[in-house]
Image 1: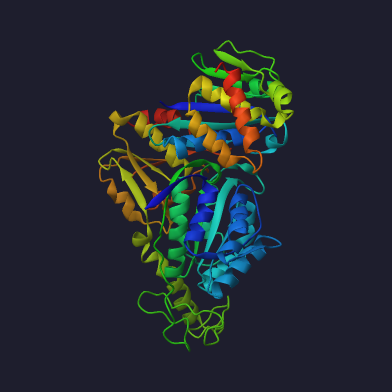
Image 2: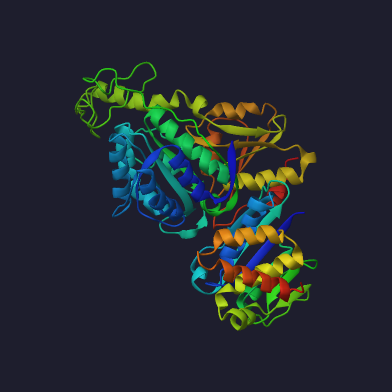
Length: 175
Length: 366
């Protein structure tokens, strides 16, 4: 059941936090294994940021993502830098409000940022909308684990907002 | 009993220190070690400890040495540029036999180099960087779990041998998050008490004197100058200097096989990998991907002192392959201890060796 997940967007969207939430959901609540890594550096302040998670039912040896089979792409630059070379049988979730390119590989369009703004008047939860959609489409972790990991990770007072964003993600992904 | 966490390596290091009873952190934040200082800044006051952000790394290690003499388990964390600044006071800690833990989350050097990228370029610096004949201890974690357990172990070794102990991790292990089982309790060793207060630096046959605590009972003179058993300077007596520095050297070197920690796989193999830190994970993946090849693996958890006994675990070895995130620093140390060819597989720039790339090199020797 090994999955290699790569998330990319621009600094400030919560790309890093998203990866931590998925890893945490897998380890703490689905009781499987995960390793999360990220690209540090000036990218975190704008530009293309990237984080990655490997999920497996057995302990993970090599910690770096080599050939991702799942992508979450939230910026055009992120797509060009990290999403363009996706392998044939991979699945890509694209925030269609911010990414204009489309890959030749299987993908799902989620207007996460537009919808987060329309429904919650808060762009900032777009990453959580994408996580909801990701879990709905790929079942990489269980919805229950995702919910608990989100609650562990978001600032106090924003729990309801973030859970609503997750559910919006489920809906946009066809659930 | 234990509990499961999904922690970053740097968090595990800080938590390990707290579990080991560390109650003082003095340092200056630097990428990629900053999360350790942040975690200690948040946690130490709640645990009755003290966190001080000093003016620089020189002050950081100085404050740690002072805290240790005041009776506390103390640590600092840094990376290459800060580590270079600490060298003078690390020598002072070695000469004054001050237990302390120094964490270096290695990045690309020299100089300010690559702040956010992984390296293992300080492996010889931790051994030889401070002047004089010294013998410190250096541990090298290869997982988040070991960032915790080896940090606890480092505090114990520091107290047992009265030396600075280095955790020589790298950016990959420091920054990655993974599953860790955190034990409820850890084993802690005690500092040995002073037998004769008038000669606090007098050592028995284990070459390690007891450790007095500042403010408890009697005055002790602590100096970086060559000193006698009372702690008083004695700088022109050749025999005194030879006796002192030989003891400082031998108290660690004479027990290097006891201190040395390592793991082995496929000990009958002719082709044997040696690794430590993040590259060990690439070797492990390659072994997992090619089980039929029965490749050997010696993973070092202790690099200094180097216990050469670990090499004799592989009696059929015909070649040692050694990937490091530097230009072959510890490969050279291995060459000193064996007639078997040691092939260095260096990589600098920040990326980790790919398992596939290690396999392609391995195939040449099968």
